[in-house]
Image (cartoon, rainbow, N blue to C red; front, top):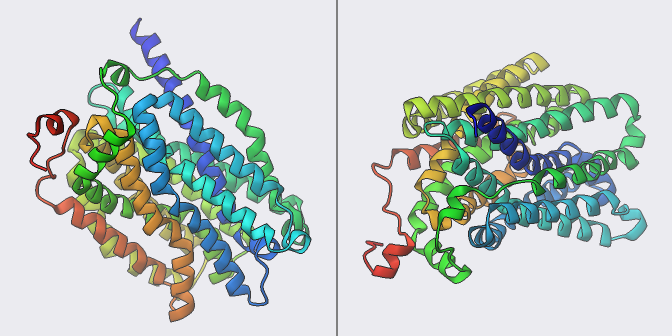
Length: 434
């Protein structure tokens, strides 16, 4: 195969494998963007704050299933192949999207409405638990030498396309559909559009080829072996979780929470908040590959240390400046700065996780580390920020939550020397130090 044809083939593989990532993030962003409308229709309450908290809590509940999905579906991928697992995750995500789009309002079916939505979010969370790990591992295994950071960055970059698309759609719908109609039925339109995209995404993923790295392995461990390896490598998984906390909290703060924060806390219009989110998606799309390229040149760990420290030092002063005199311009400036921190950090972190995991559990280990961070910290960021502001009256509190996440990332990055990882061969020979 010529060099040009090989590059074309690899580019096509990157597009196909990242396509399902688009649906995952699109669904999650749409739910977050229209949280206040979903609260009114599915989780009604005489207390607007309680209604919104139930909706955002349901958003976070989906992430509680991620660790389970990471282990179960991650083991399936490590056993049966990257391609088969990525098709399965797309199928599960599509079911959850369809159910949410079609669930009748509370006034029609009563308590069944929130129950059905919660179950659908749990299914989506189960599927998403391995989506990031599966895509990241696939990209890391097809990457050309010296470019793993750049290749892996397209896992997150594809999610930014979803952020951009969902934001543009939100701006368009707010221009076409009156607020009253949006609250009653208009919020369902983005979910229905997501369902319409599914056949195309299935077609793209079905044409994926299995990675040569996976095919070259003579032994593919069974689920009990994978679970044993995960337990033996708990130190690496724990460090991966701490590193991922910085990424998950910063991402959901600047994307999923921005529309709610802009509308409910700073009292901007829905269109203004979504326009800011659109700019954040574009910024993320630029900085993620840039961060991957820089990490390929300078190394992963120095970048993880530097960006975590800068985030700790600057996030709270920046948000205090924003809330002292709120404006769309200030909101955009602060969010763009945090976007730089997220994009460059994540561009180095994802390939680093893929590199430190044993090959036998590369998907399940990476997915579990990231899913634990998302389930415990990142996924509940909108709800935690809403609670902190409500309890303290300080509209800059989300920055302190981000600073905490950055401390977790910095602590993990500063550990001198990564824990020795246990491989299957070492465990079978009894030579592993763990």
